Structure formats: C-alpha cells, structure tokens
Length: 379
Image (cartoon, rainbow, N blue to C red):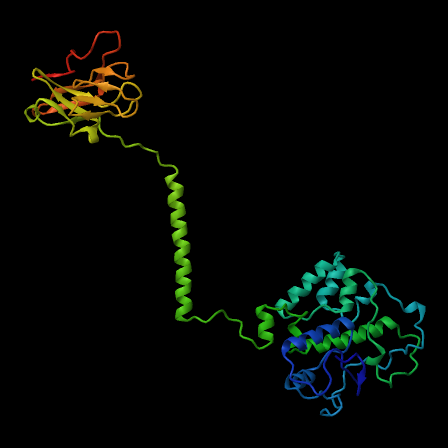
C-alpha cells in the first residue's frame, strides 16, 4: 500500500499505486471511510469511475489530465508556520453554526441534548441504512460538546496556498470550510456514499459489494431430498417424544386372568385328576365316585406349582419336595396343610362355573372346609 503522499495535487491514501486492477465497491467504500476519518479529500465521482475501470485517476501521473482538481481548502487557510490568533478558538456551540453542520444537527445542539459515542455510532448506522450522509467530524464534535481539531494534513493543501491570511480569519472557520467541502463530495451521491465502514466478512452486503451472489445452495433434486429426509427425521423424533410424554400419564394396568370361568359340563370328566386347565387357570379338576371338586394348584409351603405324577398317583412340589395325594391332602415334605379348593357351582347353561377368588381351606389342627357348600359338586 502506498502512504498518504501527495501525487500531482491529489492524495493516494490507502489506494494501491499504478498500475492497479479494477476495484470493487467494498474497497472504494473502505477508502472513502478512511478518508472521512482522517479528514482527507474524498474521492470524486470521476475518481470512483476510474477506480472501477482500473484506469488512473485524473490527478495521477498518466491520468486523463489535471482538469478535475481535488477538493482543497480555500486560499485563506493559514500556513503551518503562522500561528493562529488566540482569539480564534471557539466553543462547540460556535462551531455548530458553521456551514458544515446540517439543520438536524444544529437543532439537536440547540436543544441541549446530551450525546455519547455509542449514541453517535447508532446514528451513524441509521444514516448508513437510510442512505443519508454520515455525520462529519464537526457535527460529531458539536454533539459531543468537544472542540474540533481539523485533521487535514499539509499534503492536502496546495503549495499555492501559502499567502499570509488576514488576522480576522479564524482557524476553526477554515476547518469548517474543509469539512463543508468533504460533506459536499459525500452529498454528490454514488454507491460508495452508502458505506459507513467496512462491510463484515461473510455478510450478504460484503458479498454483493464484491460481486458475489448472496443466495443459498442450489435448489436441486438432491438437496430437496436431503431436506425432506432431515425434516422427516425431526418429525419422527418429535412424534416419538410426544408419545412417550403422554404414555407417562397413562395408568399402569396389570391384565390378570379372570377369576371366574367355565370349564365345561360334568359329564366330560372321568374319575381321577384332569390337568388340562393347569397352564391356563392353574387348577386341577378332580372327580371321585361321589363328588367333583377343583384343586387350586399352589403348594401351601411357599406357593410353588406342584406337578401331577400319574404313575405315583400324587402331586409332587418341585421346589422343596412336598407331597400330596390325589385329593390334594399333604402327606410328606414341609407342606403344613392340604392344597386349597376353589368354589364350584352349576351355571344356568349346565356348565361348571369355577371361582378361584373364593378358596376353601383345611387349616392345620382345625376343622376342614372341604365339605362346605360350594367346595364340591355331587357326582
């Protein structure tokens, strides 16, 4: 990058020297913002057109000529060798009356509104969005209530402007004239005047400034299928989550077999033990010459289910070896009493109705309940 040296009456600033390639709006906008911060003359419309075309500007060596002179201070600007009169220093209120302050800023200063740097930055951003001219240094100094020091370098002043100024011309007025010239350059318009600073890298504004399309991925069939797959997975996850959420509030119900059921007609059973309902209802149907009763298949020791041994004509508990005869009466092992019997009766349709919720027992050392009504059916 070249420094801020003067070349043929102009200031190169941060622009690359000749020969240079064509510059985009982003680079030109950054250069305009840099010149505004430093108080340098802004690029004119002709300079911007030349930079976009990659051609030399009018005031550069080999340019189109020196017809377009860069903005400069009036001839009344005092040289650096001549000190400014002490009475020329004016307060911010006096600076606010200069030609470089807009009517809105003058109104805000007159209202006495207190401005901070963050408030001024927000106003600068608003002006950038609305396409309005940014606040210059004089306006910012007037809003902050601080004296404004002109930032123009000696390189921006032509060599011919060395005449001795009149004592009546104050230095702040000259600074106001320089800023007025810069504000006039901004107000002439152009694409670069909308930039307040450098666009952030990766934003659509920076992409459009660099000539890059700021659109999303291509809307192809493959991308559409990928999006559908992703959204389907998200929808499936949400549905599963909601089902699990609502299932949490449903009652936990245990479905147990019915306690009252029919087992057929009495004529279907012969003498002895019938085990066809052992797996389904946990009962044995036992028929003797004079009665039919139902034994509940549960060992009275610890509740295991005994096995019927036809060859031995007895029930044998596989857990601890308790033995019962064909009528369920214990005779060996740790079982303390006979197995229980379920209530039986004849249903209206003639079948045997069993109710395992009502059991008849024979407690040890007490009278038996096996002869009560409902404990058996007469054969």
